[in-house]
Length: 273
Image 1 (cartoon, rainbow, N blue to C red):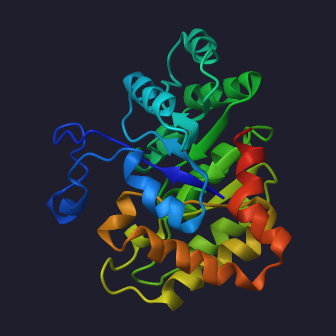
Image 2: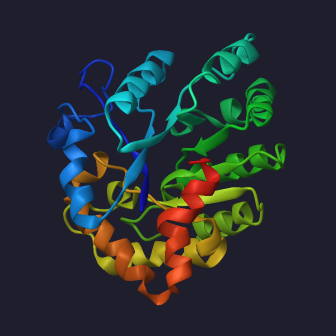
Image 3: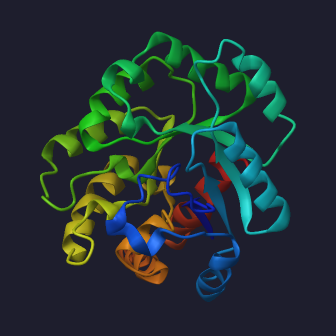
């Protein structure tokens, strides 16, 4: 089994200022060693390490960790897609085969950034190098994401954290409609990850989360869904095993082959593991 979404960092209160005092439990360092026990307990064999900082230094940091730990099977790094020398940078990173794709924190950007022709041109360059692209956005940005993705039909995308629906309010109607539209593009996959951060951290219910699962499983199907934890961010709500158990319980309705897709095969195929 592969966990397609984890982060590692040496905590820096200035760089990581998004980790506020409500999140004190993650205001510290996290390394692959912290995952050995939960992964062994659950028979998870590895993970995809996803950028948490927007610099090329982050790529070097994650590559160093990957060289030290067999847990990291692939990396989703950061590169400036607006860089006029983007091809030069992508050619450089091609020398590091552990890097499988790229991500920008689009949830912190506005619609104009997402639909900036220069940014879209940058994403179009990725196909040449067989790189994937992770889409990180809030539910109210999905319309712009759909417009962006429609302009790059042959690029492999994956939507992080189900497009961050408003789990807490359960106002899911517009989100569900946009998920349906986005999922109509066969090159877009979705990670079953990150929903605990969008819920009432201490008081969510299984039904609230499963209402979101219902939408993504119906629209993407087991052929285009990948298990991810969003560890350690998810620790603001629950221990690692609680999230795994939720996904495991929901997917009991699927066949052995379909569960293998969700927990392993789709990740291996998408990220070329």
